[in-house]
Image (cartoon, rainbow, N blue to C red; front, side, top):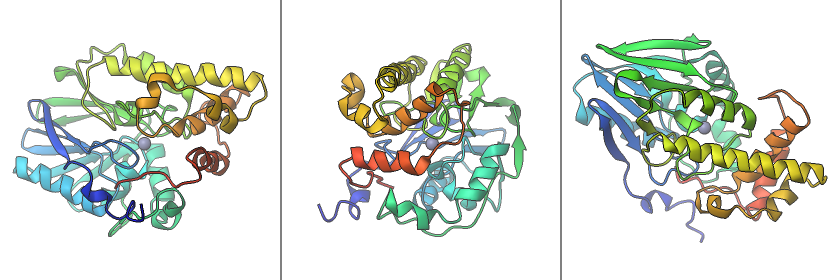
Length: 316
Ligand SMILES: [Zn+2]
């Protein structure tokens, strides 16, 4: 067990590139648990638009190499789906040649959180080799929506927060019916709403289900069809129902989580997120605004307690 956090790079399959529609690629990092996101890229009209970076220098370099092995075209634009480090810490590896685009709040949070990540992260995620870093946040920002073109192919960036965070945008490619969902979709991984809103996330899913989606590139986990939106919603409804009865009984989120039978959701990765999700649902039951500030330190601490006092499993 002493090598748990040092040999982890060797225990997972290599990332996999999946072309979901002509020129639209998902870069699947197995097994999709903490820190192992799926960036994506669109190669059309003689240029590449990349969607998200990775958690570390090494992983982002591998993603960039995968792009250049499949396309001679330069990455001119990098879209950040949200501020979390596993999607943005490697931004700087694109910054010399590409404009970085994201929601206004994504820019704010990346500027605030990224520089001291290696100092803060070890409490939660020890043993990660972050590698080199330079600050690189979105310099082109939007508030509600923005449209990008790669050649003739239209990419619509749609702000859907508060949901997973307060910074979430999805990328919708109407001509191909492809949704690049960022962390609005975890496929077979536990959704994590602590930094956003459980109710707001469900509302975002209602909105996204209006779109004629055929293919979903999840922020974590395998490529899916539109039914994965119902899976995420089923979990969030379960969180709300569980929170309601425990809150009414005066049970705190950690005790409530320990009492809960996760059922089929117990087979998904990173089940300890239930604790953070209950903290967020309790905030909403207290009548606080969606995405309101809550005590993150307390919630994360209880997540570690639920996890047997162990740090979380981050295989980046
Ligand atoms: Zn995230």
